[in-house]
Each structure stands twice: as structure tokens, then as C-alpha cells.
Length: 69
Image (cartoon, rainbow, N blue to C red; front, side, top):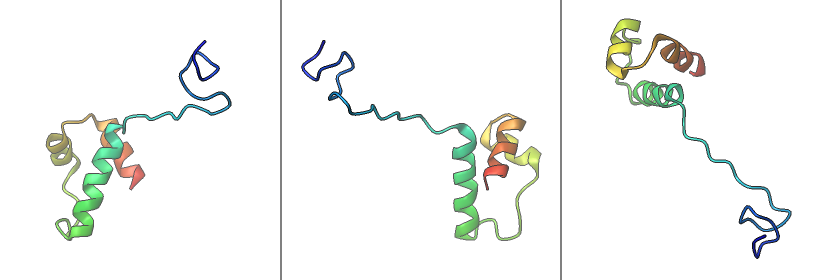
């Protein structure tokens, strides 16, 4: 048992914060969102094939990113 009253190293009664890494789809969505807001993509999105090649992600990951947007 630690000085905090449990074996996890956090004070007793205090929940641990879970920090999860961003998923690839969230990162792709954030990049596309930034490009839209900056005006870089003012005439629409490139084709799916271009985006897949540009981001080097799978089709389901790209589609999840677009769903997030």
C-alpha cells in the first residue's frame, strides 16, 4: 500500500484520469477542419483516393474522420 492509501499512487478517493491518445480519425478530421477554416479547401474536398494517399490511412479511418466533421 502506498502513502496515498492505495496501490495506484493516487490519493484515496480520487479517481485516476485516463488520458487516451487521439485516434487517427480524430487527427485527420482536425487537419481537414483546419484546412477548411483557413480557406485552403474553399472549393470542396479532394477525392477519397487523394485523401487516402495524402493521410496514409485506411478507408474506414478516413470515413470516420469525415463522419466526425
